[in-house]
Length: 339
Ligand code: SF4
Ligand code: MG
Image (cartoon, rainbow, N blue to C red; front, side):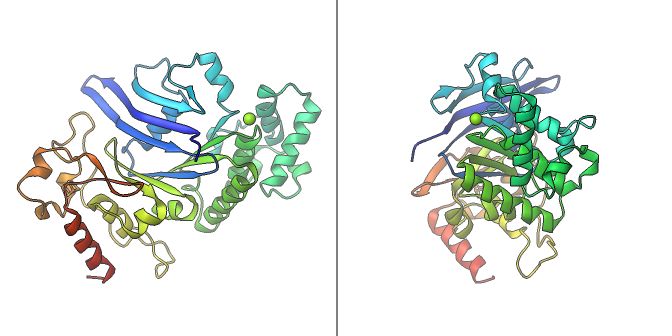
């Protein structure tokens, strides 16, 4: 398939008084039009920093960004800021966890969506407002013509999230980046919002990057998944492959902590012991080794002394782990047997 977004060896480092924080440390992935990529990891894994880099939000800060980000053949890192602004909100749009960070409290919802449209289209206010109404209607806000004139605080949390999606989609973006889009919402509304995003994607054909700590969201909406740990991709591939044949201990831990059908209340079954490492001085060898329960299965002390590289385990499925294929298959077999 044609590539819309191609990220190669992306690094985002922040100089601090304590040293260089390597938030993203050599990340590569690509995304085709109409596809959804889930980027999953704990907080501090580098997933949000990655999306900020795509949007060029580190410009004018002390962050050191290197590698390449190509959007439909255009090099985003080298693009003049004026041209980047023309893409942002238009070709590339963003939705956030907290709609109140995107919606201004003093203006009506309709006016804000209309203004977002007028930034990139030369149309009059009436026409832009009509477009805003159409968008509110499209995202399932009842009585859109009336609610257009209400303020964000008059909307419920779920309705605000819909309004933000309407604003993000008003310019028909080719890439939508959603950072924890449903985290603040209750389970029922979460499901409705994910359903809405899927529906709109079919309608608009946008590619979506959804950033989440929740593999359940990935299972619901994504085609491909990239698992991040401490600034690295540790596993990536098609959702079906990664969910049915996860190949490394961190992904095993994430999957084990997913709420199950038998657990509709969303209880966490297990969590991964320990916490994410320092990004100033990450552990030597495998960055996950201080928390890994499986490193005893690897010969010698490779997990502690040598950094595993991303390697292909099946077409399109990459994994960063020293475990031998036979060991991985054995562990996976035991998990499926419920051992
Ligand atoms: Fe665990 Fe070693 Fe694999 Fe890292 S390389 S995930 S420490 S087994
Ligand atoms: Mg557009």
